Length: 138
Image 1: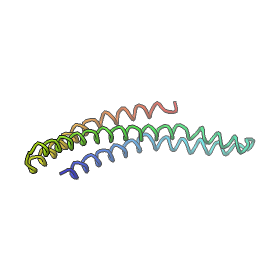
Image 2: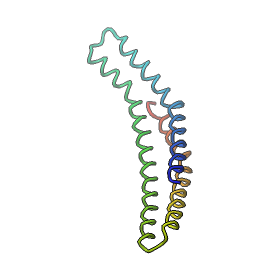
Image 3: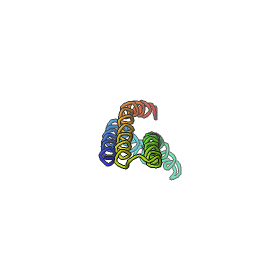
Image 4: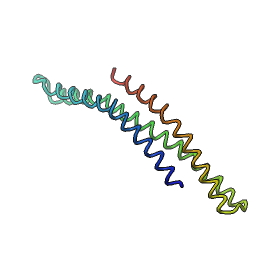
């Protein structure tokens, strides 16, 4: 049961990441490479100046990738905390003498609720991420 729930979240997050990559990150990569190529065209610039120019070109993309990573980590942490709460409740029920099958059902139900609740957060998280990404480098 938990594996099915994990797969549901993984597929939804993968779809969101692909969307963000296709619509935002890829454009930024193109800008970064064109900008970097322009840095290399400057025959008057020293090697250090070209390197600094390339670093400036790369900065918005690095910032964007850090933002995506940070948002995904926050989402993952929240989901992990929720499922840990379910595990704690299951352990408490076992300690109180509840039958194992009933505890397993409670645990599965609790984890499914965590997943459902967090699945609903993905569209908002995606929107927020795309808004933040579109403001980077402007």
